[in-house]
Each structure stands twice: as C-alpha cells, then as structure tokens.
Image 1 (cartoon, helix red, strand yellow):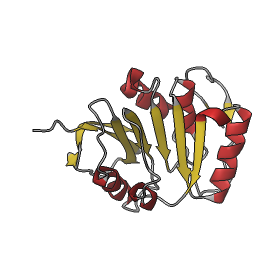
Image 2 (tube, rainbow, N blue to C red):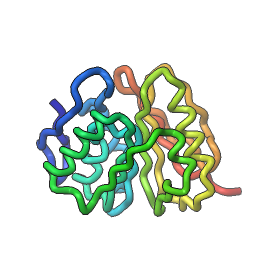
Image 3 (cartoon, one colour):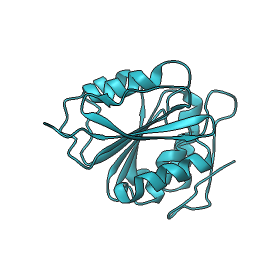
Length: 188
C-alpha cells in the first residue's frame, strides 16, 4: 500500500497497478527526496517522468506544487494514475501524458516553464537513467537558476557530474536506489 507522506494529502492511500511492471518509490526515499527539495517544489511545475501510479508527483502536489505533469506509457500504470487523480480530485492541477520516455523529452510537447522540478525514475538496469538525463540536458531551454532535476537510479548506477546545462549537486543513496540531484550549471 502506498501512502502520501506529507502535505495536504498526507496519509491518503494511492492505487497502484498489480504485477511487477512498476516499482513504486518507497516512502522513505520519497521523504528524503522532498527533504532535499525543500521549498523548491512550492508553486512550481513538477514533472514526474516514468510516473507509475504517480506517488512522487502526488507528493509534490500535496506539498503545494503548482501543477504536476505525469508521463507514463504503461496502460495499467496509467489506469491507476488516472484513478488516483480522480480520487484526490486533482484534475485541474495535473496533466497525464501517455508517451514513451525518453523520446517524449525530445519533442516540442515537453515545454517546462522554469523554475521547474523534473523527477525521473526510469526502470532500473536498462540504461534509461543516463538516456533520460541526456535527453533533458539536450533541450535548449533557459532553465533559470532555480530549477532542479533529480534522477532516481539503482545505487550501482554512475551518472555523470555534468550533463549539458546540469551540474551534480549531490548523490544520496537509500537502500538499493540513489537520488542524483542536479542544478542548472553556472554559465561561464
């Protein structure tokens, strides 16, 4: 059972798809993520990439994100995600995009409004963490100085310290996973 850990929806249960197709972010990792992000979520657009049932995005919404864009391609996960949107009565503050990642990040449809928080939790051990970070970095967007990009990957994964407009702030290891937190690189 997945519960929201903080904010307006704290304690609310989320529906998740049955089977092994998704790996919900554990509550302790979500709590750590939002401890790291602090108030950088409040009032901002939040992208939850490889959203699954939307646990991370709903945490962001619960903690006053202005809007959450969920991106997911699994039909079962999208069904659970939409059920959660309805259950939380969050239709006006969310957008559900049913597309394949990381390809969607290279389209004009990916048009974040900085400052923004981008969170990606791709399937482990498929090389998608690196590809997703690279696809985000390839976008010619003025990210501003207050945007944040976080990639969750298996703890054995080694992502780069700089990627395009993004510079590693810190990597936080939690159990079998790691949160790679990036800030816009200072232009020289």
